[in-house]
Image (cartoon, rainbow, N blue to C red; front, side):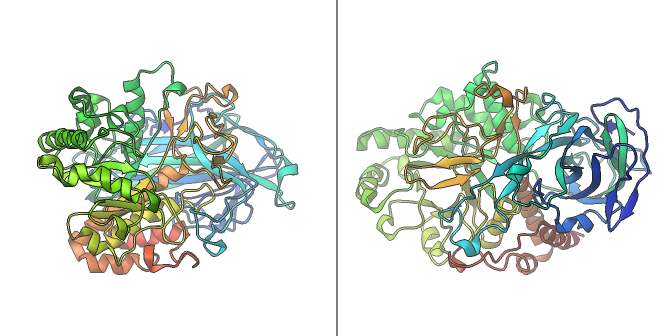
Length: 611
């Protein structure tokens, strides 16, 4: 069988014991590694967490074998946790025997660096950020009752590819001694090092039969095999759609200074491709969104809209091949793209609408007129929007968008709304009556999942469940590459060391959030050379992976609805997401499950409806 590894395969098998569903390593051999266990993708295991309930077994791991189940074109993920003593350990690696179907001999993946029709396997090292000062209640969560369950300690997020520079997440990995002076738990006796595995299931149904594929995961130290965990992967006969029936819209900033050797096109493709593989529309942070209409620029951008950019011929491989973006903001955060006068607004709106009607009629495009407006700005917004509403030409149909919840004072002016306090479901019919819509923005517990680092892993997963359950079309995340700090507050204009400092947003009012604005991490770090990973690529995160998981779940819900009806699907998902959005007071505790296994078990119920 093919192996996915970056070491020579001179393995020395060392005996082990199985106790309470945890692999306990003997006191002989390399004693720095104490235990090894596995779990799914819906949890964050802190470096200093000694009591995680999944250690004794969980949905995907029975204490002996990793069990996975999915559809063609679906990406499955799991984690392997290696526990070392407080002094750390040297030379740890993870290797995967690519799963093979015994009857056909077909093998899933086997190449970590290239997506293909046979699937892929990717391995990452989990990077931890030390949170001492947790995010306080503000627009990330309503009150202490809705706070995440655990908010301090070493939290995993960035996922470092195995071919990164040695000592910076690349294989082999040295786990450093834990600084006991920074520990919250003085009774610690070991520390965790997590590894993340993505398995992209085949897109080729014809040549890859459904059924069970058998593989294994090996943990090595200094080139010697410490533990081998069997893996059984079942491919179900259905194919997960390439399309997304729920939209996640993510803004990204200019990251060109981080990749001086890459062209703008290469950098744009890196962002677009990585987002697309995770079922996200990465839109808004490009010149075409920030300037007046330019036909030449739009023709260059058109492949992202019609899907031709997301094809093997254009260098793209993975789910969503041939599928274009669903969202296009004209202007971003109120950029002055429509001119200053009413006549200019009408001219620009005619140009934009004509182009989209001809070239991308199915894309939801709109004028992002301003950002988070205060009531005092309403007269100015109305005056600006008059150019659209009074336009005698085709530009009259251009929708107007802003980031606030529905406001009666802007009724008839704003068409699309996105509020950080979610969606008031009572107002939704009124908003939609004349073709408008209401989305939600960023994250705000308990109404929907938060975007901060301390949030549960499922905070980023549950939002797609909420989109599906309540028929909301889009979730907008304000930034995914907030690598240069916002212009507000004491860190204005600084390039952030996001691999070291969890505090990524702070404004002039000293309101702050850990991890806010970070979904991707840089593979190059010219501003902090000691953190350079040496990779000309965008690095993912656990939060990004859980967005993908939620989007895939929503597609399974859509498939199940075609078989069993929407009412049946809603009854199943409501077991773990009983309420959300305006059904909940901001002073309430979180009503939806914060446990990853609950979502996996519910997903399994939905999969059974597909037969």
